[in-house]
Amino acid sequence: MSTTVTPTTPATLTSTYAIDPTHSRIGFVARHAMVTKVRGSFNEFEGSGYFDAENPANSHLRLTIQAASIDTRNADRDGHLKGNDFFDMEAYPEITFTSTTVEQVDAENYRVTGDLTIKGVTKPVTVDFEYSGTAVDPYNNQRIGFEGRTTVNRKDWGVSWNAALEAGGVLVSEKVTLEFEVSAIRTPDAS
Image 1 (cartoon, rainbow, N blue to C red):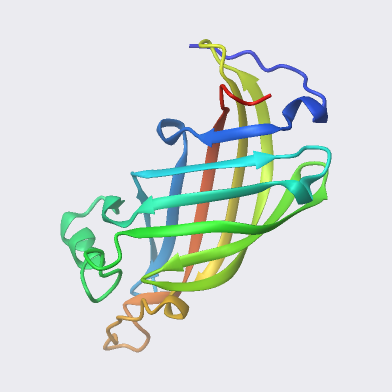
Image 2: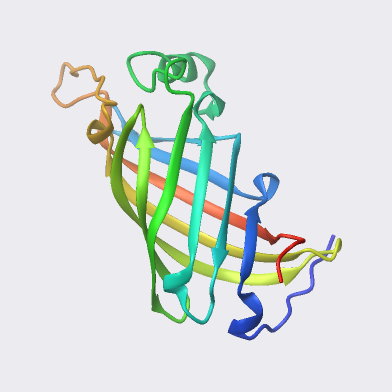
């Protein structure tokens, strides 16, 4: 399938959008055993927001992730992450992010600050996003794309389990990079 990339003036991008989970990725990267990186993602999430291209400060978004949808391509590791040592997903089934401010840094970059809630703990985080384009897909959906990332300390949210290594260091890094690859569709009721 091909998509047609259309030139769009900023005013035409202003609208309400819903994240398309089948064409988006919410992921993370953590260092393991001090020698390599382990990548994972969450396979179930939903989000929506309003993007004001002319005045980004009027923009806002919210994201809800089903914590149990964690996928690191290893069932044993995923099971450990779902348990009390890490996310305690039975007690805290959702991870949420709600923006508090959006600012435009330059023509293609935005800084989104908001409240990230993990395990019932809410802390502010800032995510730098790059606008990756707009397109009309074969089903006549107006799409907009953004890619972003930020690094957080998992201990700030009470995700603190670790194990010391014999040669020094720890099994899992405290710093985790969160990654967002988002394709959002203009909602039908948007004006």
